[in-house]
Length: 122
Image (cartoon, rainbow, N blue to C red; front, side):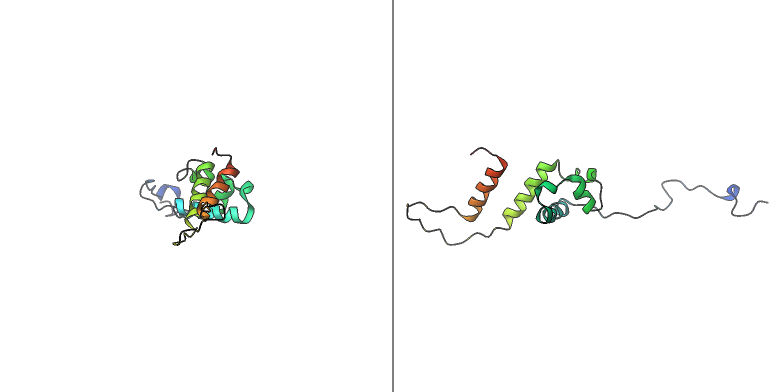
């Protein structure tokens, strides 16, 4: 009779019933991706932003990010939207300036600067 550890006495488990090996990675979310993208943008600037670098920072492959954001442009749009959400709005209306025009609010001025740097038409 062969020993218990021999290949003849081993039972082969089904792939569906045997326990998974390795480490389970936590599920990514769009919010996690955008938050890490903002940290990367703050620390290294927009030229350093790539899906591969962002994936490395999240311990995930770049292709995993595409389940949550379509492309780098969409990621930047989400990051800009997150930044706009941090801008506080004043309850008091702005007083007209010397020329009689009401100065733009901080969000409006910020939006104009952003559009100007991205080359959007006015």
